[in-house]
Amino acid sequence: MDKTGIDHQAKEGILHFPEYKGKTDYHLYFANRIYHPSYISLHSALSFYGMIPESVIQITSVTSLKTVAFTNEFGEYSYHTVKKEVMFGYDLKPIEDGRHLIFATPEKALLDLLYLYPFYDSAKELEELRLDETFLNEDLNRDLLQEYASLFKNKALERRVKLLMITYRIQ
Image (cartoon, rainbow, N blue to C red; front, side, top):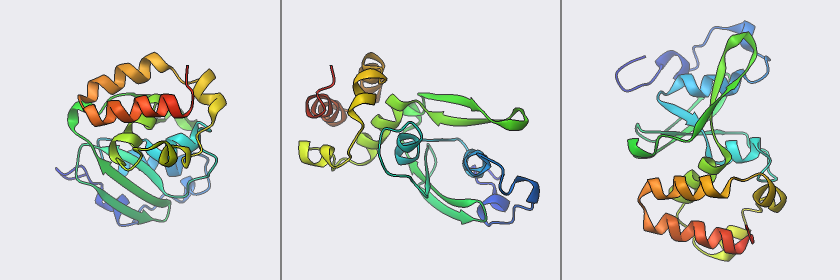
């Protein structure tokens, strides 16, 4: 790994770990290792939590480094830049071999999406996300969502969060 946070062997697809091919969750594990610091978020996390109906092929992550994309034998990876101050709101999810994945919480994945994709600024655009309303009203921690949103210190994001709450009737 160099000073930019890139594991060049992983980026170039020179990973020679045949024992990991086909192992559950290792394509996600490598997402955290290819470009560091990063955590899996955005559409990948929303799909993981069942918040969107689509399955996601490209693994989307958030980083404080430059926005980049890589393809290797384990998958397609994209990394989107956020300020260092908003590199929070992730959990460690255990996988086999005592390893773990670094994954955004549902609340943070939703905020990362609204922050990085500002075109979600109308009820129509938000409805097209087809977010699972049961999840939003039963599992989403609304207080944490609002707390995290305030930490971004971004009025446009706060407006999009309010619009999301109204559009999906989140109580």
